[in-house]
Image 1 (tube, rainbow, N blue to C red):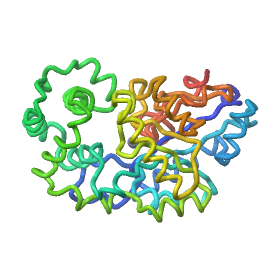
Image 2: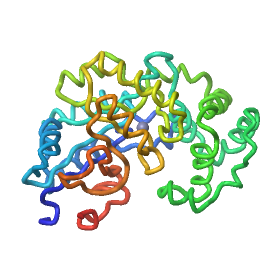
Image 3: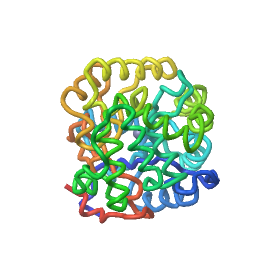
Image 4: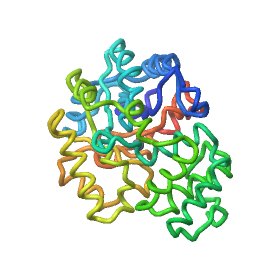
Length: 322
Ligand SMILES: [Zn+2]
């Protein structure tokens, strides 16, 4: 493992839960036991320094002696407070929680989670027709079958080509300005009013404040989970400033942003500059890889928990070393 010395690995999580809601049998999640055993496995190779220590090491350009790991949790999910925090406490790990603030204001599901819950209840294939017909109501002319399959498959590596194509249509072909409303129509058809789900799905403000009090780090993740690079400059700035203001209110200004979606199309120079103007010094992407301590701090690599030991498709550590 010598090749890992002087590197830092960021690992990202979404749902961690045992009690999957029966309405959502396909919800992608790992159990609390799997999460805890993943921490144990990771700690055989990596140390878990505090986020403050990691910030200092990056800013000084001085590597932490051992291979280091930081866990991050995106989307402000209720599971994080309920299930993840007690396990982190047991292992004395401080982590990064990336928070969308929109649901606190309008009490609605983020459109990305309308899609997640729909697909957890019904499979993308089952709702594909409804997505297309709702899209047509918003004058989206393209059909799912027009979607380039090779792009779809490379973006959604864990899905079948059919599912990947529907997800790509939804997330990359349907314009962002109408996607939320289209999903609201589909959601209402299959599951009812999305407001009934929002309070159970997200951490409340007070819980997020409590995370910061416990020593965890909060990160921006946009107000409404916006694909920042494809948003208009006005929409992007309004959304990110609001996210920043609401998080600062709870825990002071943060130096971290996790770019929603995180692939290379989701952030660009303009997005990075805006985040820096707001005060961010560290940006988390979903580009798979390890980071050296001289890495570009606004474009840090990060892996999904499925990519590490105990995940669905663990990758060889040495293949990540630069
Ligand atoms: Zn997210």
